[in-house]
View 1 (cartoon, one colour):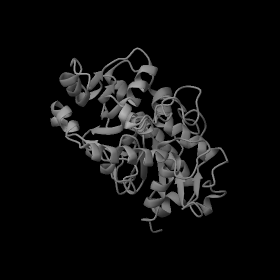
View 2 (cartoon, one colour; view 1 turned 60 degrees about the horizontal axis):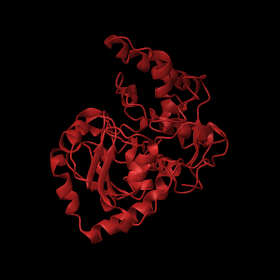
View 3 (spheres, helix red, strand yellow; view 1 turned 180 degrees about the vertical axis):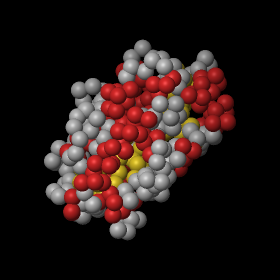
Amino acid sequence: MVKRFKVWTYKEGERPLVHRAPMNNIYSIEGQFLDEMESGKSPFRARTPDEAHVFYLPFSVASIIHFIYQPILSKKDYDRGRLHRIVDDYVGVVAGKYPYWNRSGGADHFMVSCHDWAPEVSTANPKFYSKFIRVLCNANTSEGFRPSRDASLPELYLQYGQLGPTPTQSRSDRPPSNRTILAFFSGGAHGYIRRLLFDHWKNQTDPQVQVFEHLPNRAIYTAKMGSSKFCLCPSGYEVASPRIVEAINHGCVPVLISANYSLPFAEVLDWSEFTVSVPVERIGEMKEILEGVSEERYLEMYERVKGVRRHFVLNRPAKAYDLLHMVLHSLWLRRLNVRL
């Protein structure tokens, strides 16, 4: 892949809806990917569209929501029609100007987005977008995510003014013997899974399972994550959570509590080797489940978490085997299935 794979980024369209996306905060990964591909520093950047294997449609769903939908004052303001029209118009421009979309039916074209609404880009005309590759944080198979065609995108939280690894991505190599908390979570009560988690564990006095809705500052959050054996990663309103990446970077074994989530890079990573999955209906049994993991098994998972950590670090420019390279590898694998 490194020697051959080339990506063409369409140049049509102007800011702010295309060629710009969030570089920080919860949707940062879509902006970081876009900036990487347009920076001129990526070896995967095609010089001409004719040498490209895939074609990147650089519109930002997060920017569309910010500039076209705000302020939202009533339920009708949530209508997805404006989003559909903007994306359809953009695809219409590139399909009318170049032969590439039409020759493949969009099968070698892709989008990248971490916004909750991103999967709905194609809902207005599903037949037209049936071959289109969507690289999404909201990789929910119950909402139309197709693991064989779409690619799951890890969700990151990057602080403002930062590129590359930030304090939330800083490594914690505290050994297991110094990890005194069995399980930890802190976050908002977003979605039914987190509400169930809080119902069972938020007001518990057991120091082994620490669940908070709010902590005084980020330093306490990262310190607790670095002191925990297991970090709880429940879905919020959508299936993805930045806590998975944060846990991995702090040497904390992720505990996945979700339904219908297609995990990132599952084509090459066996998530069962470095995470624990807890069914939603067994949230009340959390402590028993985690205490049931043998010390030998926990130490194996801890070492494997450290081993996969390089795949979840954002470097700018990208480096071999890091997060952006892994996203490109996911695209490469899907492109191999396309015959023109």
